[in-house]
Image (cartoon, rainbow, N blue to C red; front, side, top):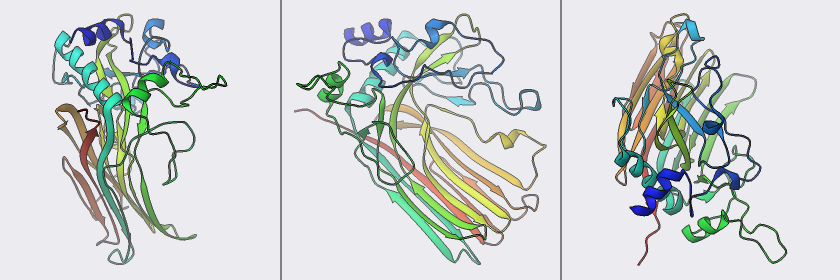
Length: 342
């Protein structure tokens, strides 16, 4: 634990990559922060000594007309050390230290991401259907480029190679041996779709990618003295299913991560009442590490929501519109597999 304590004090250290090693990285951007709240100290947004983007999870101010229905902070958050939105005061040293240990375990030792599935259906009784599913897949180091296709090419580095790559290990000709970004790992993706051109009829089902991107969570209630709450996993969608049929549309999504807000339509009474949002944000423990899942369905039926049937649980979301003319579902089975040593 002594080594982890050192990392906690320094914010980075031997083998824990600093953002200075991220290739072609833009300056750190603070997410979840009100645009009118003022600038944060340079030490908070520095990209030279700290691992991962800074995420302002507290204070939480729900979407309203006053802030353009753009939430400040997050309704639910939970660090990798177990400190969450339901806790008061500052996190303990043990929680900060555990968040770092789990962040390092995820980044350096995670080998595979978990499972997910999705469906979409359109037509009378959803006669045209698509589906997708992903099983635990090897996590590749992100090298940049497009993230919109089913195929994704990156390097699969061992824990040793991940450490060495951030010390800029060089080839004999002086070029860098591993052209990877220092805090992003991605699994595979499967995508299937159906569409009728020019008819506004389509169904899409996408599963994956599970990813590992380490972030730093902060309480910025006092913008002059932001409080570090612990390391977290960047929140991301791992399954999405749904589509459009004539004038109705819907999407079901399943996500995993350390911080979530539901679709702001939940709080906006001025939005067309034909929009319906159903969501569930739940605690989950993956390999004994505290995380969150969010499952959500968003639909529009043009009939004040009367023709929509939706549900969201800790593991899945579903919807059906206009007597099953449009259907969608998504589900998540969170897991991470790790390299082991004999």
